[in-house]
Image 1 (tube, rainbow, N blue to C red):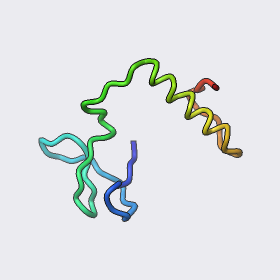
Image 2: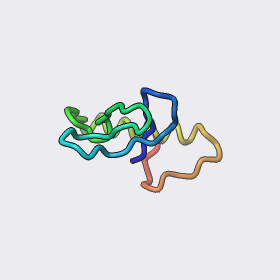
Image 3: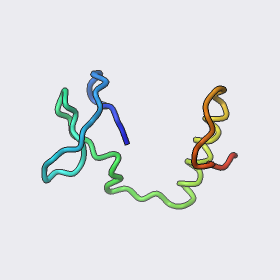
Length: 75
């Protein structure tokens, strides 16, 4: 996963922090983030399926976008 920093407008990619603190760090502003690790979050199967359907609807609403490589189901 490649994320840009949500705290500064540098556009720099977050890099994995090499410390005892799990997550990534912004090389520009030093902000830490663990969003991609999914720590302290639980998503039910139903909620996950709903997110997949919403993503598929968004892709269908954007003409010219390539289809999902994972074959996400439609609405």
